[in-house]
Image 1 (spheres, one colour):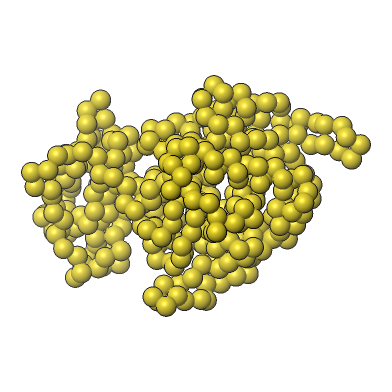
Image 2 (cartoon, rainbow, N blue to C red):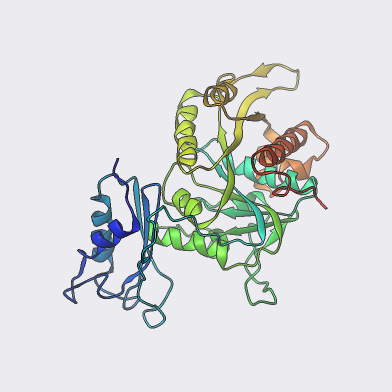
Length: 370
């Protein structure tokens, strides 16, 4: 496979013309940012104005030029937040090796950013995310959640922040994420009406997630969990490029169709050298009042997949009716019934995540809670 370098990308963009100028994007200094990581390319463009009539055509031509490169894995083309007046010409690196550009770290005050992913929707990933966050706080850590599932932002509902708005401001002028259950939360749900659909193209999704990371005051956190949408798309690529991930957690159910998609999600993180901290098998079984256990979605698939893929198995989370009911009321089970079996399962998962992080990164990355 041919190696794609920053110089190769810039050469390709020198062939993309602005329809109204008769000059290339490079000549017009419209390229604000271009990075290459493992043959995945991210480019941000500066447009003359927010009403630039050829914006969609230029974005499309840019993406096509990059996707035509031999060996390309993924191309993401976004819109820069800079104004044309404030922008400076993109500087090509002079006499420097063309190694892949490392992900940009936007979160200097956060020790660990952890992606929580699923290859398939409907496996209870958000439920696992909020309970894991609350379990980590009960262990004494400072925790936040970024709701990166832009098209289905359910974290605020499950965290009891359904009607919250962004009102606080830190001394440095940055807005403060809403907080409940000792967990800071940022979601697009705080910015739109409850019934308003989010109908955005990839570049806008990329932009809003980056703003969640960099434009809000998170303070000092031990963990920032990123609740990703299902699949392996724009949101996943943005997180991997914008933040230095400490690891990823895969949520699945025992059934083969969910496991099949989860393996793809795991391969995505492995391809970016992001360690998998483990697999959580959600909805593993249902136990009725008289003790009978029903394995509705099959048996043992998550553990078997973890063994096959040589990654940690974090545990089985059963179906509990009360968990669904309390999630609608904004009470994760770890908060609603902290002494119950379900809460104990999530705390055990949280302890394993901490232990696995220490095994990968060392004690200094995950110090003992204060």
